[in-house]
Image 1 (tube, helix red, strand yellow):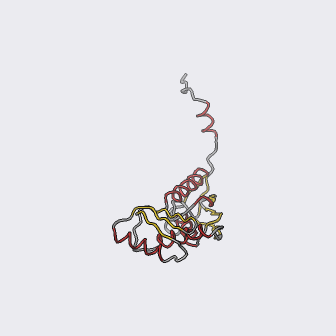
Image 2 (cartoon, helix red, strand yellow):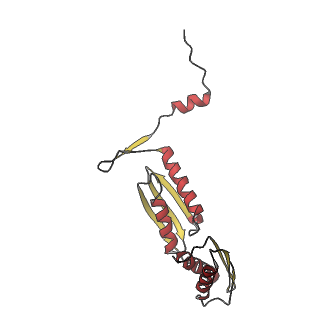
Image 3 (cartoon, rainbow, N blue to C red):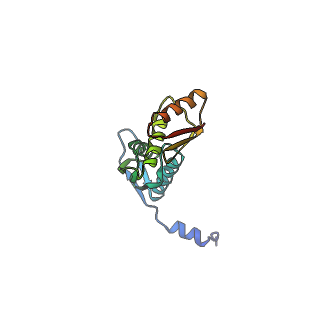
Length: 175
């Protein structure tokens, strides 16, 4: 008589769970996509990681959920630019079939915070700048820019963008 090898309780439990899989219709000439419950959580984790690594976005008020490869983005951001970046990053992630966009743009609560967001957005949206890292702080109308730029020309461009915001009492750059 042949005996099967002993199995652990964990192995028996995992093998007893039915694998939930959904076969999605495929575009013409492409194989069908199979999405299961594990893929949805992987999609969510992947998008959260992409949001966390992207310096153009403040993801703390964005919730991400996925079902059958369709991602739902809910929450608030301070600018249209951040909303667009969030939607782009989610839509270009692996195994995402679609994105439902429920992110709202809300105004900042105080003037200093509004200036911080405006300066940061202007610098990050400028295609001529290659800012490696950027931190903008505004307190009582005094702005401080911290970060790393490629060269002295880049530093001057960042400083000029900061100076364009006439609401500042003073501007300090540490680049």
